[in-house]
Image 1 (cartoon, helix red, strand yellow):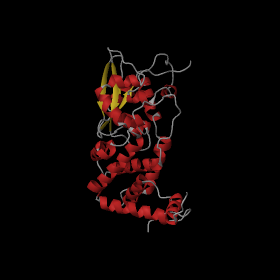
Image 2: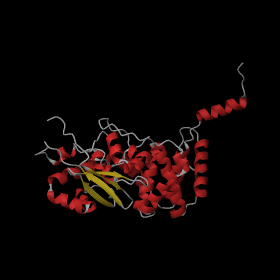
Image 3: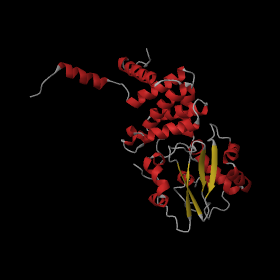
Image 4: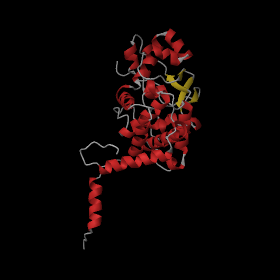
Length: 213
Length: 110
């Protein structure tokens, strides 16, 4: 037989109408409000960052860098020599990614990037990293069994191609320059950039698709 | 869990919830402004990701961002001069403000 307990009913009613956010929301509000009060950040700067990384900054930036390296031998040399300086010519708004190193795939070499400590990533040119890049499993296995991890991405690396794994740090981050696919002769920078995938610039993709002719 | 994404799928949202974006924004802004060194931030985040509280949770993005929040609390305490007690008190203040503010009204700290 149903019973009615006034106190319990009132508690349920309060809960149903409660709009108290979840624990992480409250903790972030505490952090942000204290940081603003102490003059460490401004709300405007936080809002601008969120908008930029939610809407504007993504792997298209890196793809442009790759495409230019394929077309302009002088840029390619500068990029491989000092990637952080070389990409300044693009004038990307936002902060750079510290010390950036470009790793060029060749027929004999394949490069794969990971951050075993946390999730260091060149996000000012690739946007936010994909979920799998931040997973504990990828961070552990990319170093231990890179070929197996690559196979799970559908990428089979022949035995005569060496796989080099690069562990990102807060001081040094990486972008992989994939090989330019055959059949793209005469393409301009924008058309080339459109075929460069985010995963290729991390190294979990190797052969770029050029699509329908 | 680790699962390669489908490269043919349409791009999804970058963040699942605003708090995740705000936490990342706060971390990156503090580093860019020089309040926290990149190395200290990476270490704090690495420690948080390896902590028992985080490794006990599913290997998901939500868990990752919870580690980001933990790491922020650590660098606030150790590098920025905002103690964990202050952060805890402020969290409770926000909770009270949300609880006590009628629907439709802006939530402000008292």
